[in-house]
Length: 269
Image (tube, rainbow, N blue to C red; front, side):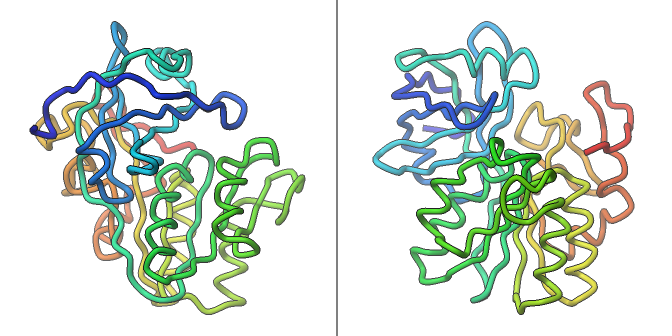
């Protein structure tokens, strides 16, 4: 079966994570073979198709996407129940590559969805990462229990309001850790302003970075150009980009992006 083909998949279960976030579990052979950081196009029947990183890859025979209700399609997906059907295309794009022996992983908001399978792959290979998990408050820390079981005290929560762990932004917590400890690579997914800040600091210290970027993906196969950043198309060249690529798009990263209409807009988060 071709990854580009839409497959109808029945939901095995739906789990409420935090606030307006749901994880949808389904069985799919191609998704079970994906690499951490790859994404799928998920169709909400009768509504629209949206890109989603895989938050589980083949665990117990199931894969998953984790969805925050932010628009018509994601609201429809969050309203589904076990037994309902979705459409799936993919997996697409380039995922994370496990490198180094002392990685720092930084997630903000729903960015933890893309990074959780990476952590599981790292641990399976004997690599023990330190994970900064950022959110506005303790009740919005995505996958806190799942990651806590995997990492123990290597999980470092960071909340804007100080309700759990480090008080401040995930980028500020990561900056402190980069100054105080020794890491040989940084992995990131989350708000672009956070990633731009951490990348600038890590790159200045000579530490390689892999970051998962988000743009307005429509075709998922590199044809329409709606997800462009610099010379790259996020759907096909990304969504995970390494330091040399991030340097190429430094002028756009955390500053501007192409909106749904094709016009450039400011990055505001």
